[in-house]
Image 1 (cartoon, helix red, strand yellow):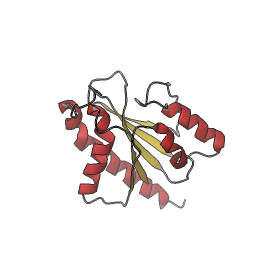
Image 2: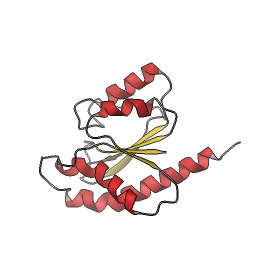
Image 3: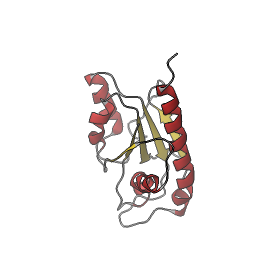
Image 4: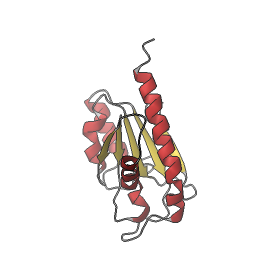
Length: 155
């Protein structure tokens, strides 16, 4: 499974994806994962969405929720995405996903969205988003375990 972080380390809570990758690299994981820091351009995801290996994206997402709220979006379950829901970046994730679908089958993909407080340049993670990190790590580990179990289910 590929764990892909979107975000800009210099923009407050938009750094949550890269920060999560840093934390994942520090812990002993029960399942091997491939880590990719994709920066802040969603277009870089196209090659990964066009692959067959499952993808788990981590990004800040304007969802209209309380700061630090975590939501998991499964793109393989008839998920309808608003143009502005997922990415805070220039090239919209919805556009990239549409392009990937036009090219052929899309990898199994889930997005872990984290509601930011501020994405201003030069700011650290907000305390609310910082407090959500343990839960985000647990979600990733559980998703990785579930994905590994599916890989070995030959029924």
